Amino acid sequence: MSIIENKNSRNQQKTKSKFASKKHDGLGANVYKKSNSFKQKPSQVKPDTGPTKVVIFNKPFDVLTQFTDDQKRKTLKDFIDVPHVYAAGRLDKDSEGLLVLTNDGKLQHQLANPKNNKSKVYWVQVEGAPSQEAVNSLINGVELKDGLTKPAKVKIINEPNVWLRVPPIRERKNIPTTWLEISISEGKNRQVRRMTAHIGHPTLRLIRYSVGKYTLGDLQPGEYLIL
Image 1 (cartoon, helix red, strand yellow):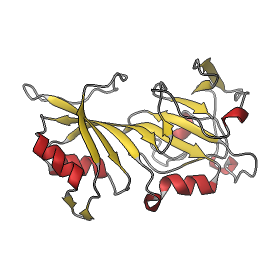
Image 2 (cartoon, rainbow, N blue to C red; image 1 turned 60 degrees about the vertical axis):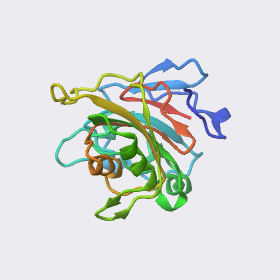
Image 3 (cartoon, rainbow, N blue to C red; image 1 turned 90 degrees about the vertical axis):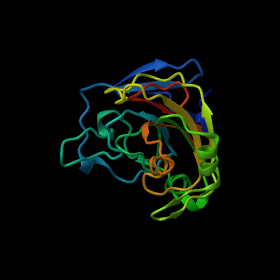
């Protein structure tokens, strides 16, 4: 599956940060991976009035979707060298995959606000083997503490060809796991995890593959692409 670029792709940034290492993705765009020499202070983050920037990032497990943290945990600044961009929505610390960042407030709102019904696709590894009845309940909506979930697109899939997680998931002996593809357009807190727990199949691993027209493509954990 390829990375879907926005309408400004012809004007993709062609220079890289002096702090970043670069490789070519084979599609005419540059993939970046941050070196360890870059240090960004919070005071350097200011509103950007220049051309629209869109960055897609493969967020590794155990990384916060923010640029600063008082507890010295891993954040976006450990991976992304692009100034003045902000995450369009959140991705839990214990989840992986696509995060879109931009300096365009309107685009950020379009992607992050659940009222805009932007579809988000997740690959979810769950404990056990959900029945079709259980899958249908996710499709039709399940009752969580904060209300009924909207209808979703859910199907059982083969294990996707993705990177190994570090650390690996904790699997229980003699209990199988199953991969689901779940597409939702709302944004309740930790919604996908609560949905699978509701049907008796806890989430072991969660990877976001797409948000709206933006997809993860072939980016590896910690890599980002400037569109």
